[in-house]
Length: 224
Image 1 (tube, helix red, strand yellow):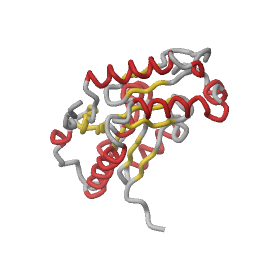
Image 2 (cartoon, rainbow, N blue to C red):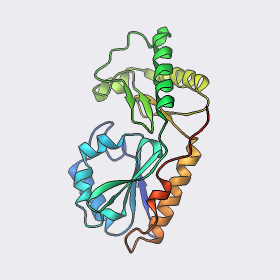
Image 3 (cartoon, rainbow, N blue to C red):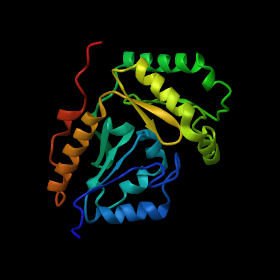
Image 4 (cartoon, rainbow, N blue to C red):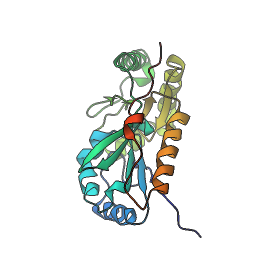
């Protein structure tokens, strides 16, 4: 079997438990893998959470320049250069879009009995600029609560379907055990960017990056 030329991992329920940091052993293995090939994490999680949990440890890897981070369902890409995390591209929402999405989510949740009476722990609505997420049980809910609050996923699927009908212009993803994620572009566009960056990473894996990040920092604004 040929050795892979690059590796892309999911984060929650793959490298770590949902909303938890990867173990030191996992991070050490990722750093060791970077010595050989480019490595990426593609996740629905936001950059700030990962920066607080584990990115400082990966930044110390000798070949951290080979690491690519695609947070918010690939709506953004970060790379480690010159001792800091640099935003390579950003398909962020406009402020007006973010306000519209949050208001729509709240109206749907408040107006439907199926979502009432759900115990929650901590913040439930997350605005990450490039993605908006909602988790009915809250970010601080235990793993047991996340696994048992909605047996069969009936409530999650109902929320996902209602959001899709209310906001067809956005990508509504049903992520993990907790929540739908709303992204700015059709997901195929985000995967196109991931493919572009990882292909470039593979071609340049023996040297430092040279492609122009500034060209890809923001997406064109859509007319509403």
